[in-house]
Image (tube, rainbow, N blue to C red):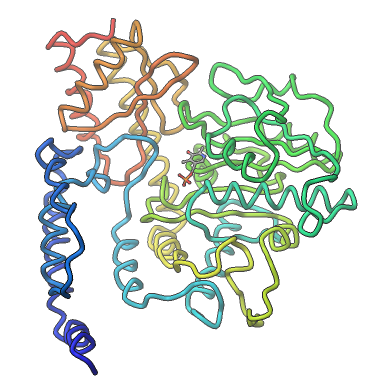
Length: 465
Ligand SMILES: *Cc1c(COP(=O)(O)O)cnc(C)c1O
């Protein structure tokens, strides 16, 4: 062994660097409830400490952990705490972080059964559990990808392959030039990642038949044109602003009568289906052809975790595969068949642990609690005289001020409080405050503290009206 090998071997053996990482991680967890939800100016400034030329010599691992904790930890978003309400991010269930730690040490390449039997097994288990929780058709398969952006890409690629195949065209071999023209139907409120995907797959956003949506961002079903077997219809379970759900039941029935494909983007909303009180929002969803959902949002797994589910295994696998001769397929599951990636993180491990820990009741309770907290917040804000402009059907709360300026001032006030973090968004051409409840840690007290920030803002003459 050369000197470098010996140094690294010693680091494996004496565990000092791992112990160091562990103690910093514990310190972080213990401080989470009172840390700034968004980093202070000075913490952000300190990030420039990382901006240095790469030195010539190898250094000790411990120094690196020290540097990361000293300047990295204070510049994090308190995402795993209870008062970060930005975007639709979600926290992390403790056991999911625990198994991530252990499996990070394994460093498994999750592409093949041969490169990680344990990951292949846990993907199979997750696939079965997800089908069961969501009550999806038995033939459904799941691919484990980095997020819903990627899951949407996979679902739409499967749709493209399947619809063209039925029309006598192999898109894998012949491409899109000269192919029968598919009709993409989407309403104005599809997520940005879906628009991106349509561009990447060669459809182009200009070729979409745009459909109208209502004041909550739901497809206006009676405006749906006559469908045929060239149609790919894009629906949503959980609008990223309002949290609204499309009418899957009606649209899927119409689509299935003519052999059209319905893809549902349910990044955070699909989990409503795993509850008793909110599952009515997802009625008829099981009749779609593909579904995209995240683990890392409302289910609170760590990043990155997205899932594509598809009821036509052949379409999904054909759309995503080249048949490289060097791939050794086995009788067991080869995870890469269901994803665009080959080498990949064994991310099903955290998904498995989270579902197994919570069980069906725990999942139901966690998701339902997001809704209850959102209703608590809605009520509290209304009492302060603020206008909540969406129907709080799930976990999203939208507030609008008298004009965009006032709304922006309020967002800034709340963000600068560092007590909580709310984001801005645009809804029906208006600036709005968007609050998303999706961390298991968010308690009633966290919601009260958040309402108190708005109350203080109003007292300090930061007024929405
Ligand atoms: C977040 C989100 C996406 C994108 O998912 P990522 O996991 O961020 O890639 C797509 N659609 C909706 C509705 C979302 O909320």
